[in-house]
Amino acid sequence: MNILVCLKQVPDTESQIKIAPDGKAIVTDNIKWVMNPYDEYAVEEALRIKEKFGGEVTIIGVGPKRVTEAIRTALAMGADKGILVDDPALTGSDSLGTARVLAAAIRDLEYDMILCGKQGVDDDSAVVGSNLAELLGIPQVSVVVKLEVSEDGSVVKAHKEVEGGTFVIEAALPALITAQKGLNEPRYASLPGIMKAKKKPLDVKTIADLGMDASEVGESGAKIRIIQITPPEERAAGKIVEGETAEEQAAKLASLLHEEAKII
Amino acid sequence: MAQGIWIVAEQREGELRKISFELVSEARRLADKMGQPVAAILLGSNIKEKAAELGKYGADKVVVADDDRLETYTTDAYVSVIAQLAQAQEPAIILLGASVQGKDLSGRLAARLGVGVAQDCVAFSIEDGNLVAKRSIYAGKAYATVTYTDSVPQIATARPNVFEMNEPDESRSVEVIDAEFTLDDSQLKTKVTEVIQEAVGKVDLTEAERIVSGGRGMKGPEEFAILEELADLIAATVGASRSVVDAGWRPHSDQVGQTGKVVSPNLYIACGISGAIQHLAGMSTSKIIVAINKDSEAPIFQKANYGVVGDLFEVVPALTEALKKIL
Image 1: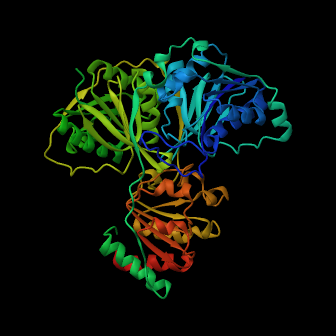
Image 2: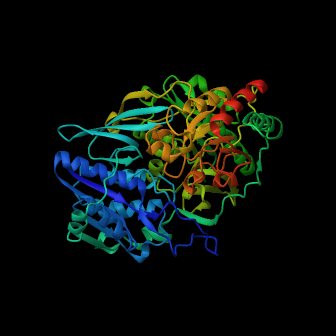
Image 3: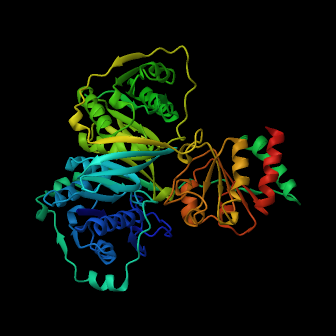
């Protein structure tokens, strides 16, 4: 089975997010960049399927150059090769622009399945996966917590987490699956794995290499543009509920919730 | 010239979900500013009688796509129908819920129509006839206000439990129209083979108005019983912090936080939760936050409206008793 995994880097979730003076971007100096947590589940699932069925796992990331580290991490976990698309024209791409680049990189590859994380924990859009599946004309199942591939490798049964339960969805391959937390426990890259990864092929491509025009990507190709980025609204200062005993505190809290907050 | 605001209503097992009414209400407010009509698109099977309900919240027209292949949501069928309708009638704006269904549908629909989508929005406005959307990024550590370039229709999804529902106007009548569409079975590449229900009557965290949540301070899975009791009393859903989920005490679908669910209830009661950045990011838009923790230095107290410094194993049951007297 040939499996493609699309991944990205995001600021580590411990990061404090600071807004740039122009209010249109976040400050990126001193950020620790990591593989998007949801993409780790995608990489792990691809490796498990390869272990069962044989085949190859290819990792695809879209620039800048530091994304190479995340691709190498995936290679160290056990993926076979990587592709990075890095081009100055990509700056300012929205989700559709990113999906177009991925589609262009993927179109001429042979694959049975594409795995992505359900969303990037930076933009939280959960759009690239759907956009990509549409551009490639393949079915999608998103927010998947369990994936079963049929013995003959032609069909998947995906458990999709929905409000209040799960839909079990059958999809013919090739298909695009987006991974939700709980799909698996991602492995750590072993030391031998890290050493092997240095020798695995990692091709770097430009927009021109993919036959794309700069107008399809970056700011010029973007359909969504940011007007401004703002911090969350300040919450009003709270109060500590007085009381000598738990019963007193609880009674006071109950009356505050009822009479002051009027929420119960 | 693109005209009108559409909302995509959401139904499950033939019942309209609350997000549908939130969407109609917000669309009504935006449409009144633009002087344009609101249409609700309703997909399902034997669903037509539900159309009138959407009118009560402010829809001028409900376009009903009734087909047994639309009974349960599938990406292919729903995107095909909505795209056909949009291409034929050219709405200016399409709003969907930022539910699991809405987020899956919106991205595919946007790519099919070649337009942008603003996902999981908490506020909308209209400027120069364009939709402006405020959406949460970095799990709510920041907000991005965005608008569209060269996108018609302008598509956005609305976070559940954020937009106020109008008072239903029982006297309001609505035009109900049968949608014109074709669905070719060969286009439908996925099939729902089973629907597994978690717990009947439980409201999903992302849509809950009240949440009682437990963290490491709970000490173990059995102790969650006191939270379940409080939750049952006040009709709340039980949530959990990441450490509790990673320890296997609660399922990951209960996790609130940056790599869990982002919630926006009216009331969030955090028990034995210290308030790590990633957890706060998932619940900081709660209207009222209550924190119960024996560590007075816990960061959660900085975000709480009401803080109780104490032993949650005493305070929570006492709170349940105190609330029983009020309710």
